[in-house]
Image (cartoon, rainbow, N blue to C red; front, top):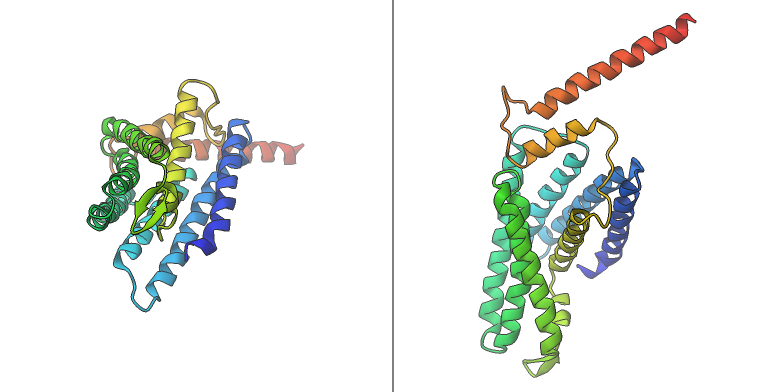
Length: 273
């Protein structure tokens, strides 16, 4: 089932990179592309979930993984366009926790299956799946414990790089009478692990390069920079809502009213002339 979606994944990765570079080049449509890419990922995960549910013997772990990814992708789409609903942070944390649970079970199953046939392969697969687990933890922790999110992300990157390095060093391993490389082994997984690892790696590379000023940050021009700073404060958990609203929501309402009045006055002046 995964192979039939590979072409769509490849297209979305290309659009993701294109949207990021367009945004860094100060084209306002770049961030919109990123938002719709997130929505497209949600649609693909949803379709895969429906197909998995219709299987003769639905795999509960697959359904859990896909349901989590649909929620996460949809919420990320909403974040790009600054759409909110009550308790969205809690739903985001629940989805992230369920995804972590699914990969924790995958790690347990992989270790139980491989440890007696090839302990080296078992350790390498634990490193690979563990990197996705810790990357997901980093993403989930941002709104609640931002001080832990970055170390978790760095740990995820370290685990992934360790997997890559050791896989090159070990080469092909003997597994049930067949010599297979760890890279080829993970490509056989009927899940979204390769997709997630690629997404997390792209995000990490972007964050690292912007931090050392090799590439510019993404360009957002719909609202003043102060608005995005307030959004960042709310998403990292450093600000709590007052009367059910964050400061950036109040800022947005006031700014939209100001723009509306300005446009109305300008139109009135133009008509009068």
